[in-house]
Image (cartoon, rainbow, N blue to C red):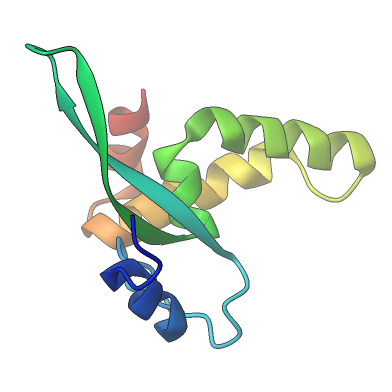
Length: 107
């Protein structure tokens, strides 16, 4: 993928491609890989990069959210419950659904 891809232009805006949350300083943003899968040919092709804010990235990678929550809990800088609550609230806000509906989506 070329450095001058559309994702590199979007990076300058500091805006999440998924929920449009904006960070002026670019911190709290994560570069997320976008893959296209072909089950017939058993291939995966990297098609783009997307910017995800920290909160939305945890929705894309719930296992990572758990790990961060465990680490924060162990160091006294937060808790697993706080991280889970943040993810549920963000999913609810982004999709215009209730917290209860967000809980049912994540199981």
